[in-house]
Length: 216
Ligand code: E4P
Image 1 (cartoon, helix red, strand yellow):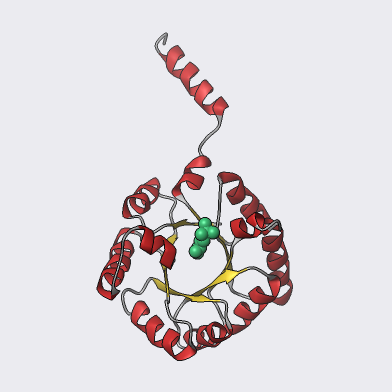
Image 2 (cartoon, helix red, strand yellow):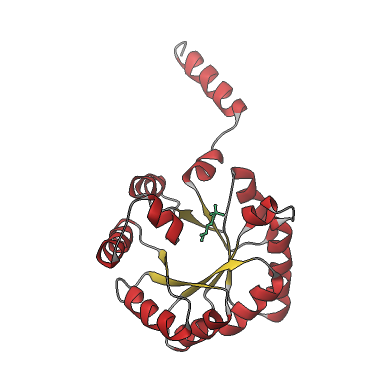
């Protein structure tokens, strides 16, 4: 399973990248706004900087919602750097835009996936990645990991090539569950990635080894 970091924060992106396990980055308008990135020039420069830090797929989300506008905006985003993946919402015009990008050799990430039906449509349109929002599904009383399992089964049976990018990750356990459920990629906040490191017995064991090493 590939690891993406789900943030527009440059210091967190650098920290995850320095771990040596990072395969890409996802952003969205909320994450960009949180970093105070405003205006087309600043937005484009920010994506360029992220591409210079991480050698992997970088999702940049369109802000428009009509087919023609999404195609125009996506073309500009894709021109920033060869690693840009155009992130398109799962709406009717979005499906049409994904098909256009797929036909024209531009990678896409279909975002805001909450059902297997949406995952099927996005795959048929040729999305490179599809992003089911695990945490938001859990928040609304459903089971996000079960959706990953269902999509993984359908894609295996049908031979769909879109990669399942588990998004809206809330904790380290979500990452483990997504790996088990067949996600191809997990995009995670830095805290959830670092959460994978933690086990109290590791800390206790290391403290004992350090103590005993003084007797060597
Ligand atoms: C990633 O592509 C999504 O935009 C992100 O994971 C959404 O996460 P949230 O539900 O924590 O906002």
